[in-house]
Image (cartoon, rainbow, N blue to C red; front, side, top):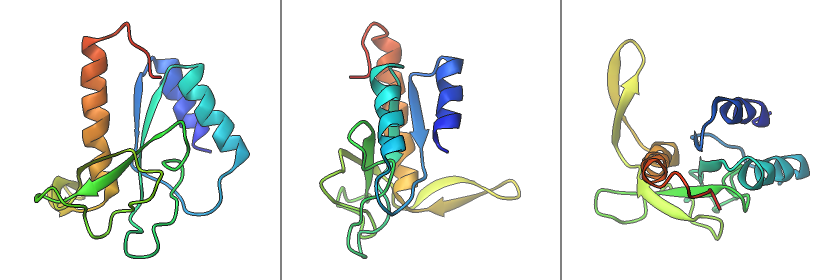
Length: 139
């Protein structure tokens, strides 16, 4: 299902896609194929939240755990791994994700924590770098 919105990003000319979402469970071959296509054929860098299972076994979180997706963990203001952040062999990078001020319901702001809060930092930097080096590709 996550392939449809990603295809819309491809069609719109996106180079970097932030995915502050995911699921536990087993890898699916259809998803493996889709993310491989987005990276290798469509030149799309997919950046995804690694998950918040750090205190519950560090289970893989998809799509972040796929080889063709950048997996982002969370670090605190002290530059230490956030206690909740998944920290398994699939994690590629870490970014601030602990007590991040964000928009919230009813025109308010709220401090939130999670790898979903860390992922936009990496996506934003990737997009900024790509904007200065447009001849480069996602691989």
